[in-house]
Image: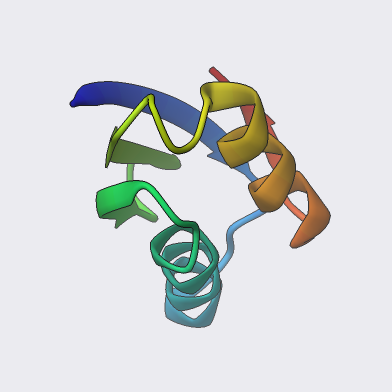
Length: 69
C-alpha cells in the first residue's frame, strides 16, 4: 500500500468534497480517501499494483478539479 497527498484546488463546499471522495473511492485499487476542504487536499491510500498516481490524479482532474501530487 502507498499513500499520496494530493493538493486539490477548485473545491468550494462540502458537495465538492463528496464528489472528489466519490471519484477517488470509485477507483479500483484506492483503499481509502480522506478529502479535506479546509486543507484543499486529499490523502489517498492505494494499491500500486492496481492503480497508479497518474490515474488517480487524472480521475480528479476529469471530475473538474485542479490537482497536483
